[in-house]
Length: 227
Image (cartoon, rainbow, N blue to C red; front, side, top):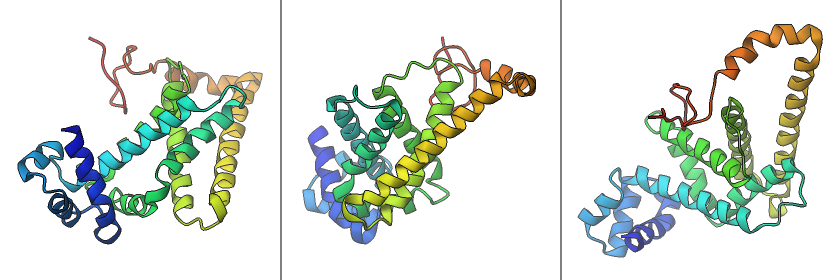
């Protein structure tokens, strides 16, 4: 089953360049592989949508493998995060057109929700691979912030024609620097006696948020209500 799923995905990629993530691409992949249509439908129930999702998940898995094999201990933590985003884009480097087509595909209203889940999943995979132990609202804010950084970097990368995507990595570093500056600003706000009073209400609300499985009943990505 896994072999058949991989074969269909691999066969679809040459067609994505011309037909995008579409029924035409899905049908062409089945024709190229000769895999039974009923079996293919059991592997990809939603057809082209599930093909695009599988392609994204493959990139995430390759990124996690790269993070686990890299020597990250000598890096600053912000550089480890940057490495995660870079590894993710490098995983899709040879299939840049498939990513471009995917960006358009998941921008469609009927696919936007699925696209948002995938981006969130990528951010979650990076934080998890880096050993994030957040149990409170930081679990959500870290992933939301990284999702925004990742999305912006992907869009820049798609239009980047610099050698070895040097401009993209500079763009990524600037975005992460922006995030670090914002986090520093928040810390200063909480430490200042005047502004700390203003932040008391918002901070209390945030303190009620818990990471998935730790007791906060909210309709948020990744949330599961404890049994």
